[in-house]
Image (tube, rainbow, N blue to C red; front, side, top):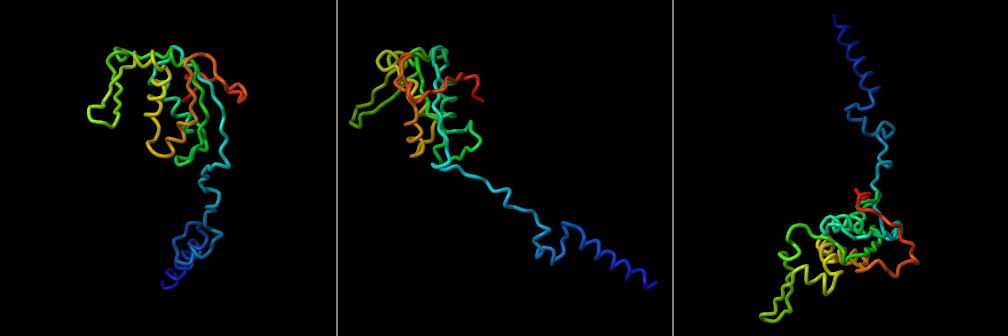
Length: 185
């Protein structure tokens, strides 16, 4: 009768020593049984490892907010696999035909852009209809800038955006790739 508990203890110790995830105290000393965590390191992009492409987007007959959301994603680099939130890993984006962008509903006359000169009574307001006539690129730039981070990185990302009112742009030397907004997820 006393032999059975002794055999049971020996067999149990043998089972625990062979099990790979054993909870015995000395099992953590043996590194061969532990998982190799070096293969699971998160790789962060930096200025040396980032590849920046040039992208050309035609804004003709595009809805302003949808255009701005997709372009902001491209500028931030969220469409890339090596996206890092604190690094400028986005592409350089050229937008042509910005004067032909569309706004839905009555936003063309009802939406108001406010600015202030800094002096008392210096608040000015303008609607997108008037702004498209006087400075057609400003409507697209304001919409995209509002969707970027409000810090130094956001200001750096905004410098990668080039908006032109017509179909011509001076960036042929960079060989931009034409991209449709429907291809951006």
